[in-house]
Image 1 (cartoon, one colour):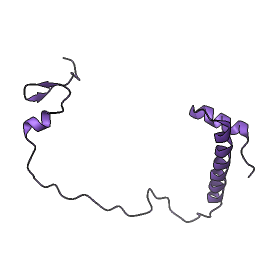
Image 2: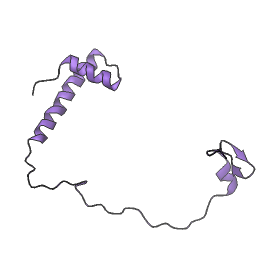
Image 3: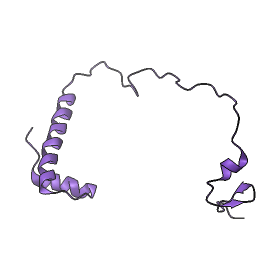
Image 4: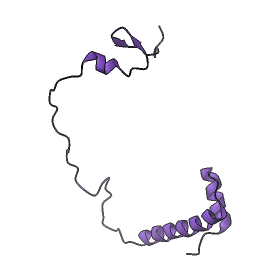
Length: 97
């Protein structure tokens, strides 16, 4: 594979809406070319007879069961509320009548 040109990298940067310096342009050109070479190598791998999979490892639950514990005092919960009305959080209406 031939390396990406400066113009191609500038075009990619424009599509991403990022400004790149001359130094970054050369570094990105090298890095993007390397990534494309790796993708090209992956495309050459023989996957005949291999079934598609959403993930390569079996999923296992890693969460613990819920346990009841003591709650925080109401004053502590409401201490950092941006808006408060008596003993409640005050929020803007989401749905209109």
